[in-house]
Length: 231
Ligand code: C5P
Image 1 (cartoon, rainbow, N blue to C red):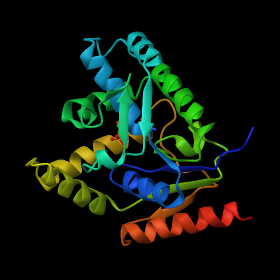
Image 2: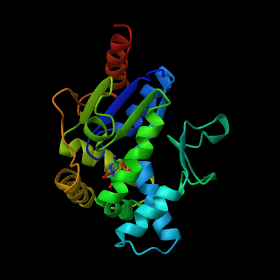
Image 3: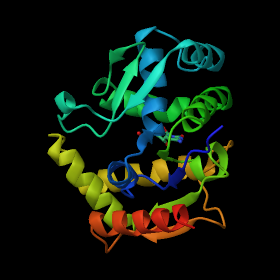
Image 4: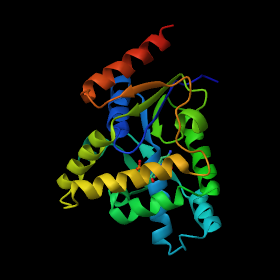
């Protein structure tokens, strides 16, 4: 069986993981997998089917049965999305980006059973594609043998500023302080999660993006990947 090339990227909220991962995938012609989109899809499924958010068994069971496909956006899907998400063939790429889905995805992401289901779906994708996979547990749980492991980070103020700008561009009027405080809550949840908390593995390259342009970060990762491929 051919061995596919795996780039694993982890990092906290607003470290730039999604944008960077998508651009690296474009440069290398790899599939970009935003694993957060899968936790969001789990939350959407729970909402749509009126499943009790606290019923861990049911949440995991419905997600296990669902067909979730993550695709690089096609020519006709260039509407600002970084990834196209199909749930049982329906395009839900934007429906998973609402505030309600965001909030619920953070809750279901705490469930060990659901994480097991999604990790195995993610591993199945990486077994048959060259991937740039990004999330909160990729370097140490989903793809512990990845060819290249990256931990992206940035200072709290830079991340909060980026997030605040994103919120403003969506027309939300949350204050900077609100965004900053919510970000710290999310960080705490990711890093103190009972199962697979966000962590930096010893063989990951840590890139602090606070003072870097996106292109510089993409260049660094691409160069590392090419060097490993040509070894
Ligand atoms: O990154 P994004 O905001 O889309 O992630 C949605 C939710 O899923 C977040 O609460 C995040 O912490 C969680 N998540 C996770 N493990 C991943 C990816 C995302 O717990 N691999």
